[in-house]
Image (cartoon, rainbow, N blue to C red; front, top):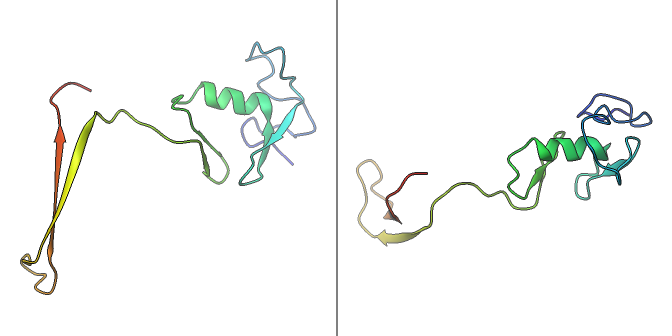
Length: 108
């Protein structure tokens, strides 16, 4: 079986063995993600995370399962949701949902 990050055989050392100065993870170490069960070299996963957005999450490169919680740069704010019995044009049998976002001005 191949590591789809470095494209080397899992029985061989990681292709990222020279890219990381980590003394506790050896180039031949292999790990398996808990939910999807895909296997990769540990140094490859470390390199993938280090070169990513470092938001506290990790996404399996094979099946896209997300581990952790993805966070972005959304500013603080709040959202109000209201429903009304009136319909909008073209949707005579439906009510209306109004969503209002309250986000302070600023620069992202």
